[in-house]
Image: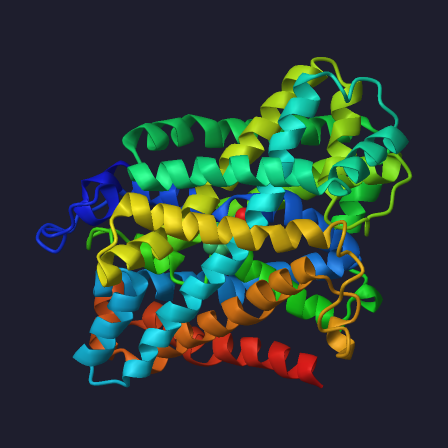
Amino acid sequence: MTELTQNPAVGSAASDDSKAGHPMWSSRLAFILAASGSAVGLGNIWKFPYITGENGGGAFVLVYLLCIALIGIPIMVAEVAIGRRGGCSPINSMRKLASRDGLSKRWVWLGGMGMIASFLILSFYSVIGGWALAYVGNSAGGLFVGASSESIGAMFGGLLSDPYTLLMWHSLFMVLVIMIVARGVSSGMEKAINILMPLLFALILVMVGYAMSTDSFGAGFSFLFSPDFSKLTTEGVLTALGHAFFTLSLGMGVMMAYGSYLPKNVSIVKTAFTVSVVDTVVALLAGLAIFPLVFSNGMEPGAGPGLIFQTLPIAFGQMPGGVLFGTLFFVLLVVAAVTSAISLLEPVVEWFEEQKGINRLNGALIGGLSIWALGILTILSLNEWSGFHPLGMFERFEGKTIFDLLDYVTANLMMPLGGLFIALFMGWFMSKQAAENELSIGNGAAFKLFMFILRFVTPAAVLVVFVYNLM
Ligand code: PHE
């Protein structure tokens, strides 16, 4: 992310000459790292395993993989392409491209909706990031050593039931994010990520190695990879679709913003493909590390959002070097979460700067503090208000707390909707010449196939999932 700091609009408060020299990523690799930093996060390691567990395993995973391939990758290509062509923040890129091609001004709403989604997502994302922070301390303090699955479960239950502790960790997480965004995403950060991301990957491999040594690796493996379609509900299909968007950071302008820094000679198709593959591999490995532990300890795969916090500590408590590995793992989980969280706050701050003339520090503070305050609703959903189901009168939202609703509305509705319009914009509204220029794969069979997928397959798939869920 080094190059981002050269952009006055991103790196400092002085934004008068930000239009003059729009900075570029130094290389394809820099972009891949930044985009994977946004994509790989709590979604892969925390959310993917628990929603897979709740939705019965293999069949859900298969649908998720299909969604990544048929919907996620094409939309990532489209989103990055629109961003590169627009060259500004999402709202202004949409404004520029729409006016250039004489389209409705309403396309600006695509950027606007994305910003609202960022705001809502970060409010609960930070609370979960706080759990990870708390677990750094738990692991370093040796609390996992030799602990039974019951006592690990009780530890997690204790954390959730205490709003003040949750608030403290949520605040610390938000302070970290605000500080980084306020200073501009620094070159130091990029260097750190270059080392920490591969390290996270290596540690997940260690965990998979440990899972292989248990007697339930086979059970975990087949839970993930042998589909049993009788376990898949229509809501499960929507969750898989929503998660494909969530995990790839799609449909809300984050990839558009990153794309605006991408040099013209870099292949968008190849890069989007690489980022998606990295992201998917991390999620699948996390699943392979966790489900064998679930089965070997006689736990429920559908245990919910606490799944990784109730399984991995058991392993850390038993393996040699577990205190070190465990502490390192949760530190890296925090880093992965922070790099995603930055990409959620950045568009909000950028917009403050562009529209309201509010400087970066104040923008980060105003945006960050409002998001922090909103996060209190998620905290209370976990304890005091766990019985409060604001939309309980609708069958679909029965039993959903405010936290559940925030997650549902952003991942399952706003992001797929945003993605649908991104696909439609590039497939139907942007000029064919522009699309050809951005994709730079010529205008032969590959281009035609891609445009066909973007125009028909992707929108139809999103619509079909939506319609089925409404029925
Ligand atoms: N992709 C991130 C994750 O998997 C979450 C995220 C969503 C980040 C949307 C940015 C935008 O954790």
